[in-house]
Image 1 (cartoon, rainbow, N blue to C red):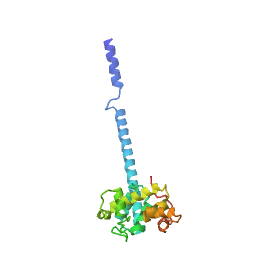
Image 2 (cartoon, rainbow, N blue to C red):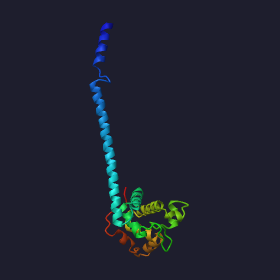
Image 3 (cartoon, helix red, strand yellow):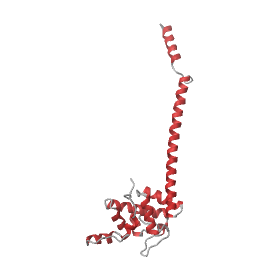
Image 4 (cartoon, rainbow, N blue to C red):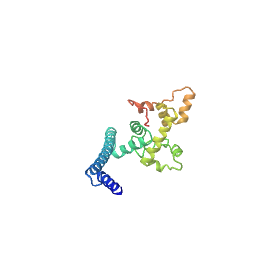
Amino acid sequence: MIYENQQVNEARAASAPSDSSPGYEEEQDGSASNAQVRMSRNELAMANAQLERWNRIFAFSNRYNIGAQLAGSIHDIALDEGIEPELAFRLVRVESEFKENAVSPVGAVGLTQLMPATARYFEKGITRERLYDRETNLRIGFRYLRGLIREYDGNLELALLVYNRGPTAVERSRREGLDPSNGYERRLLRGYKGDGVVN
């Protein structure tokens, strides 16, 4: 009986696939190949995404006749802050003509023409000098615009007017039954078809 059990166990061991059996090696090779295919697809998808990003950036760079680095900053920071890049470029063009050191007669600063008091609402203690920093200015300006679009329930024209004229002036005109428009939003949105934001 013991001898028979030993024979059964030996037979089972002989029939079981071993690490060195052809079937096992083929299975392992197949798993490795599948993993490589998945990795290659992921790498390809990432490369395509980067290529599409650079194509958009260079298109904006050419359209607005600005450097690729500035175009890349506007594009990427707009997306990070939930603003559609096309609107972001239009805003910066109208506000500052892409001049990082632009200063308005009333003291608005930089690419998105931020008032220091407005900027401090988003970043306490920020100095006027820091608003000349490209990324800081774009980040706060686009965040401010995104907040206004949300506050005015997606009314892009009204949000842009408040961005340009300030909430006090716009609300006063509305209370008095006057049209708050100064033409700013029409100039900025001419030919634009989007809603201004990305999810």
